[in-house]
Image 1: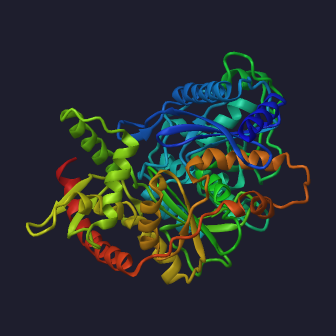
Image 2: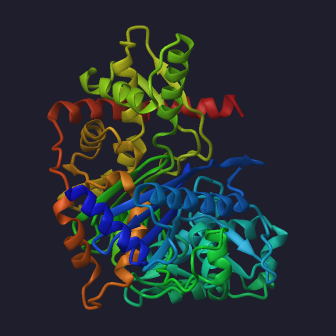
Image 3: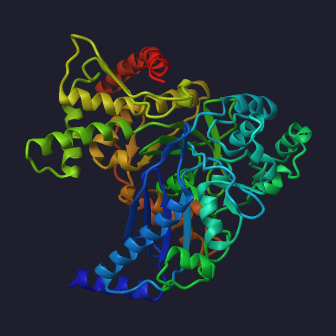
Length: 536
């Protein structure tokens, strides 16, 4: 009876247009999350898509992004209809997110000048070296400004025609609202932010314009960048054409308030309630990144560390790795094919649970096995390209458990390399790390391995599986909160604090095993360099 009443109440809330919607375009999946004013997940939708390697550049077709956006929303609508028997016609608010960083440029006519260059490309090292020295601020290869300056250094003809530079989140937001704006967290992955003004650093803007002055471009940098907004500010309304793009059936009404678009870093902070100083979170899926909210500035430029902003404008140090679950996903698929070849019926979730679970009873150091899971390049360790490889010695213990533990360990080794800079060199302290993303689907495994790799207790929100779509839905709900005096950390405390699981404390044997593996991994990078050279 209580369950029936709850469904009825939720149905009325959705029908009345009081739910908030978040949609995030992730690396392999576009996901939608519908929540009530308390952040409770009501329904979800999803759509699978994949990047493409086009002429050596990782990219997504932006038409596929639009198709996937509407398909994901249609899946959400279908699930709402099946569960609650109602149709979504209006919403309290909505928000859109995407993979952070990258390079999307259009001309004055709105024509895309070059295919979308994603975060996954490590092709801007020359630009990064120049800009890091110019700004006295670390500019990672993924950042939009690095892609822009590399295109200038390459002499690419399209640069002179640029009218706007944006990320995937900014592109989708502009398609739906007509507004060229950006949440501060996402903007901080395009160009450095001044924490005092909560806007692009003007001295660095001026320095860049001076650097590019002799090129004769008609634009200045600030003119082509989106305007910066913080959490809670209005970022426009869903236009009639935007509503039609999101819902081609025409049922969804325009005029819905839209929050500032954020990247997966900002939505991860929101989803894990990690926006206060000394809090941290890790988002682990196709890529993996950890963000620690900083008490003070770093002592010096650390090229492997991004300085980004929380959605409400606090600096955070980000250690980012391009490669996390892609290689062990491929291995699980291989095992799936093996079961099918034998005529066995095993679901994919069960296969993941069994295979990943075997890692917890394996040898602490993974039996002297070694994987380097570089599907793409890895900036933290200096690789512009990757070649996944597996190495074992004649005496290595080649078991399923050790193989899976090796795959899990290696997926976090580049992350640990970056975190060591923050914790050991810079003395950054964090009391607990909160995790979300596909790495934690098999929760006990993900938490134990992550705790070992980070040497820090790891907890999960109960909604960790909802991921970034839920995070941007929370930011949308925050924008239309009744009490505007409530700050984002306090708002998230009220929603999430009671839903955080007990942290898993790292076990000494797991830490020792990971440390052995970590040393083996760094020695094995010499093999990876040979693999990249040998297999062009």
